[in-house]
Length: 272
Length: 286
Image (cartoon, rainbow over all chains, first blue to last red):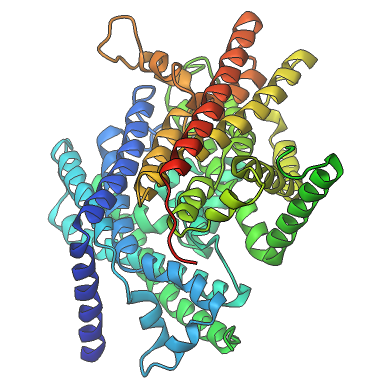
C-alpha cells in the first residue's frame, strides 16, 4: 500500500512539474474550466428569476440548490483531476496496443491506468465549489449541525468512489469495444443525471429513471446524498440515504474491479 | 466544386469517393458511433424534468412565451439544428494540419482546401443523418405530444432553408476559427472559448427569448437584443423558433436574409483568412 502511495505521489509530482512548466497553459485551462462552470451558474441564476423553487415543495430553493451545485462541483472536480485524464488516454492505448506496456509492469494495471495522470487545473472548479458552498450555507435560515458537517466529507468521498467505479467500468467497455471515443461523452451524459435534485425525476417516466439511477447505476446518490445532508434538515430518515451511499460506493468499487479484471482477461493486443 | 476535378464526372467521382471513405471510417467502429449518437439525447431528458419541476413550482402558464411543452419541443428542435450546424473537430483539425505541416499538400495540389473541407463535411453529415435518422425519428415520435400542430408548408420550407444556412454558417465560422492556426501555434483554448460562447449564445442552453428580461446597463436594451446582433443564434435558436412559429411573416423573411448575410460574411472571412494565412505560412521538412 505504501509502495503504491509513493508511486502515486511521484506521478502527482511529475504532473505538477509539467503543469508548472507550462504555467500560461495551466492558467488558461483553469480559466476555461471556470468559464464553463460560470456559464452553468448563470443558467441556474436565470432559472431562479422564473421560479423560487426547483419542484413544488422539494425545499430546493435558491441557496440550498446552490449548495447542491457546489457539492456537484467539488465531487466532479476531484474526479476530473485525479481519474478522468488517465481514463481518457486509455482509448488510444487500447487502439494502438500501448496497453501492453502497462500490463507488463510489476504493478496493478487498474492503479496504473486510472491514476498515472493528475490534472491540477480541474481543482479550480472544486475551490469555487467550496466558496459557493460557504456562501450558500451562510445564507441558510438554519445552519447545518455538527453531524451534517462530519458526514459531508465522507459522503463526498462516497460520491467520488461511485464515479470512479463508473469510469473503471467505462474503461472496461473501451477494452471490449476496441475503441470508445465516446467515453468522455458517455461519462458527461451519464453524470448529467446527477446534476439535479432527485425530486425532479417524478411521474410515470421520472419514477423509473429515479429508481434506475439510484439502485442500478447509483448516479443519483453521488451529489444528492451529501447535498441533502448539508442543505436540508437532517432527520432520522436521513440516515437511510447515508447508508445507501456507503453501500453503493462499496458495491460499485467491488463490481468495477471484477468487471475491469474480466475485460483485461479478454484483451487481445493490437500491437505487433 | 469545380476545384475538386477538371470535369463534372470526375468531380462527382471525387465526391462519391469521399462519401465512401467517410462511411467506411464511421462504420469501422460501429459500437462507438451508435453509442455516441444515442447518448446525445440524454441531456434533453434531464432538461425536460428540470423545466417540468420549474413549471410545477411556478404559477406561470409560460416563461418568456414558452409553455412547458414548448420548451421540451424547443430543446428537441435544437438537437436538429445542432445536427446541421455543429462541426466537431473542424477548427481543431485545420489548426493541427497547419501546425504539423500536412496542409502543404493542398498548396501544391489542384484542390481547393476550403472546398475539400466542405465536401468532406457534407459527406460526414450525410453519413451522420443516415445513421441518426432512426433514433431521431423514434424520439420525435415518442415526444410528439410536446409539439404544437405542424406548421404550414411555407414555414416548413423556411425551417429547412434555415437549417441549410445554419450548416453553412457553422462550417464557415469554425473553418475561419481553425485558420487562426496560421497566426497562433496553439488555438485549442480559443476553440474552447468559442464553444462556450457558442453554447450560451446560440440558444442551445435555453431559448434566447429568456434573456429579454436581463438588463445590460444600456437603456432599453436587454441581453437578448445584444445576442440578436450576433450570428450564434442562427446555429440553434433560429431554426427551432421558426418551426415553433415564434418568428413569422416579414420577421421571418428579414431573419432569413440576415442569416444569409452572415453566411456570406463568414465565407468571405474564411477565404480572406486562408489567403492571408497561406501567404505567411512556411513549411519545413519533408
